Amino acid sequence: MLIPVSREIFLPVIVWSLALGIISGAVYDLFRIRRAAFRIPGTRFLRGGKGRADTVLTFFEDILFSLFCTSVFILIAYRLSFGLPRWYSAAAYAGGFFLYRETVGVLVMRSAEAIIRALCRAVLFVCRRAICPAYGFIARHIGSFAGKISSRRRAAYTAKYEKHLVLSFTVPESSPPGSGNERKS
View 1 (spheres, one colour):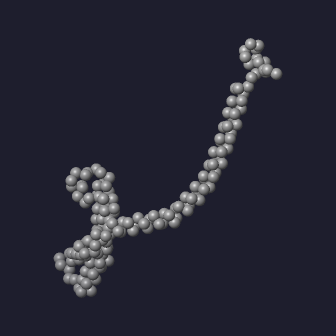
View 2 (cartoon, one colour):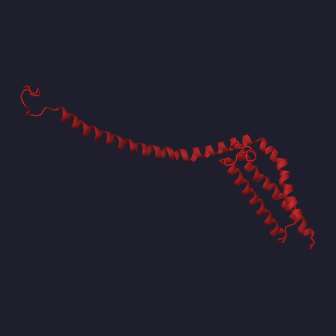
View 3 (cartoon, one colour):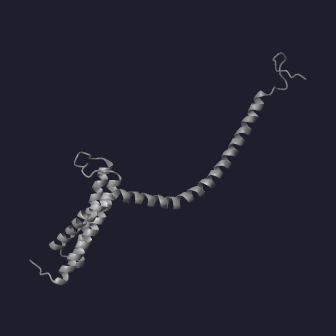
């Protein structure tokens, strides 16, 4: 059964599908940049890299991306097409994805190294600003506290074994004559 499509439905569905396809391409670039950052080749699974951690992670990333695209397409169908998936909506969604991937996606992957370096710098900046002062504060206070405990333990240890050493090297008051331990006065 064919359902007629009006222009009021057709044009917004095409535009939104195209735009969301472009957004899906940008989301996929995040996965591609992560793979570039960790130097994961795209065809390792086919070449026998089964069971490796990065291959398994790539597999789950692809599943996650497929779920994302499916949910976006279902939302397009329910929101704009009254719950009816349209072939032109799917074509516009795929067209937007491939349009992004073949134009902007190529530029993004060429500059992936710079993007990765910028992200690393941003993370390091945040860590230095947030974590390092807290670490310094903790290190100063815990370090001084540990130093006090350590010096007290050393002093107690020294005092204990000093008494032991002094007692072991003292000559008893009454030693038998001829033992060589007599006190000479």
